[in-house]
Structure formats: C-alpha cells, structure tokens
Image (cartoon, rainbow, N blue to C red):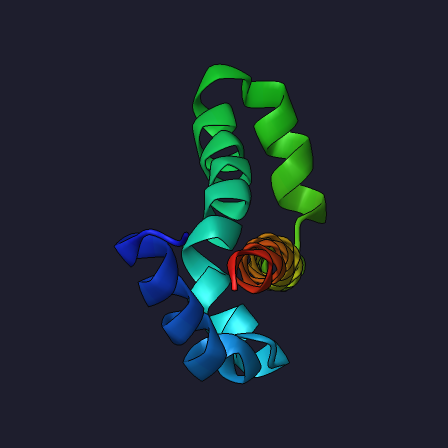
Length: 106
C-alpha cells in the first residue's frame, strides 16, 4: 500500500517528468549548483592577488578576463546539467519503484 506522500509523488512526477528532462530546464534550474563550483575559482583568483604580489604581476600581464568569464559559464552550465540529470534519474528511479510497488499491491 502506498502512503499519501508516495501517491502525491507519482502524480507530481507524471506531470513534470517531460519538462524536467529538457536541456533548457536543466541548465536554468541547475544554475545555483553550477555557481557553487564556479564562484570559488573567481574568489580564489581575486583573493590571490592580495597575498602573492609576484603572481599578481605575472598574472595581470598575461590575463584575459574573457577566458575566466567563459570558463565560469562553461563550468556552470556543465555542473548544472550534470546535477539536474543526476537528480532526474534519481526521481525517475523512485517513480518506477513506486509503480512496481503499487502494481504488486493490486
């Protein structure tokens, strides 16, 4: 017998399964998780300028800020899609298990 929460999840997943499997949704919904990986790199770069002056001098002579921005965007998109696809697989697996459980009790 399914609990009320499990029945609500089945209804929810049947409505939202297709929407959450799309790439655009995965990128937009996963941006906060992607930024959790990209922002520490920028913070490290900015803070590193203050504690090691020679590296700052060499880095500034060879640094292109567009490379850092592009790398941040690329990392954010990659991690966001990776996280949301992983989460989608978990939810889909849970849905399939609940359907099997529901069919066994009938």
